[in-house]
Length: 630
Ligand SMILES: Cc1ncc(C[n+]2csc(CCOP(=O)(O)OP(=O)(O)O)c2C)c(N)n1
Ligand SMILES: CC(=O)[C@@H](O)[C@H](O)COP(=O)(O)O
Ligand SMILES: [Mg+2]
Image 1 (cartoon, rainbow, N blue to C red):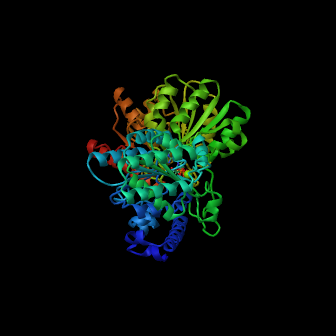
Image 2: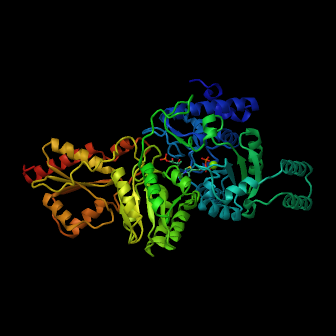
Image 3: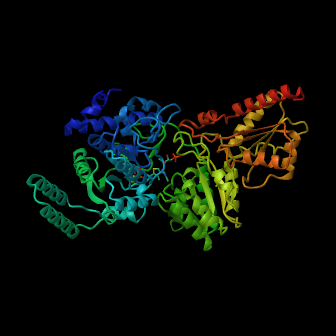
């Protein structure tokens, strides 16, 4: 596919000299490129369509091989990657061995830091700015943060600190009035009222030019500067950002490259904390995405002409979770639902429409979501807080301080638990088992099918003995049928069983596949599914495992704090002799992006790898003991 300007090898160096017409042409080519590629690979579409002009303006004003440019969340970095030498890699966007859908320093010097979780960019940027100054270096630091990411508390911690520090730093607020779904919160309303008359900007520029040209004395310059501030405070509603020590510039049309460049240049020259408020349209340039920016925030492969996904949507754990919660809420008026800006992703869309008074979207504020949930439960409601596993990491202290110590009975729906795949290391939910199992009084359940999810949620909303959590993956793609697990015998040890395979949640599929492969090699197996990850191992279970003498534990989490580690520790402490133990986990490393199954294979978590490892262990045992009994 030819794009014209975008195909020019000298594009980065000529970007600064393009005329307005050429810039418009380039923006059109980049939008077409985004549609051509994201429709084939899937990814984040609407956010990227909305920042084409902004990103070009940033690259016209800054050299990102030296200047540090941070995109908050980073899901809107595709144009940045196109302009920094990775255009040809978009065929492998978010694929195993391809480029990440977020900033990733290991990919390019132009990627200042890892991104993926919202609201951290200003903090990291302030740190970089301090380093620059203390090391006597000279480069710009720019953080681009969306209005959604600005609903995260960490952003205010950073604004508060950066504004007071007076460290030169540019924050570009990309305000499209959308998070994934409609943006929420008082800040969103504040942004709508912020107006800086264009005349005021021009007056400031005129005054600056006069100052530059006339070399007036220091006193006169200070007087003029004081009068400017007086004029501004009289004619303009002071923004919260200025109260926090930032100079506020804008709002400016986020689809006018040259207008953005003007403000970027002013901000650069100010050498102080400056916030530029940019107004953009999420999904700009593609009618389907403009009309439904939430639906086109994250997309699977789709038909550009019709906007329709190429694959028919199948149900998944989030959908089943949301449907069951609606059923439960019908007869229990105390049930409430809380989300941190992910109503669609966590399956709570229908609940929010049927029970708007009992639905709370707190914005990208997971810490606040968990603490607020605790308050609701404390006072007699039955709150169910649905968060992605990876984003729950944000609320670890609240789980301890506001929930567990007082044994508060909240319900947590931990979505996207385990390997998520295409979003990569920043989004895999591989820490929740470790950090939840060590919290006293926490009950952690792991459903292996939609039916089990429904049953466990029904039990959870009745559970009053402290906090209870269900962890489940996104699912979909046919692996999780209704009676997926019910079809299997609740397996006990048969006499002479050779290998016990222990797993839980979605990884029970890998254990069942490994069992099948081992049986085909004449190895008799028993598959054990653990439902409550925080329960102690029963004496009967330990007796059976010890009788077998060989056990493999398969789980989609880090080794530390996992069930495998707990079982190995229990066997050791009870001095139960085993021929061998094999633990399968995400081996305390970060996986690249890729399809879920590819990442299972990356970690040797798939049924084939488990069976292979067990056969090798059996072979080794035979060689060591000369025993051929298996
Ligand atoms: C801590 C955290 N919670 C939730 C998310 C999921 N998430 C990804 S993008 C997004 C919305 C971001 O909105 P905004 O910053 O306005 O960017 P836009 O997509 O509008 O450009 C959310 C909630 C996340 N990445 N990080
Ligand atoms: C960028 C971000 O954090 C979200 O858009 C996330 O990618 C959503 O993941 P799902 O597609 O699994 O809902
Ligand atoms: Mg937004």
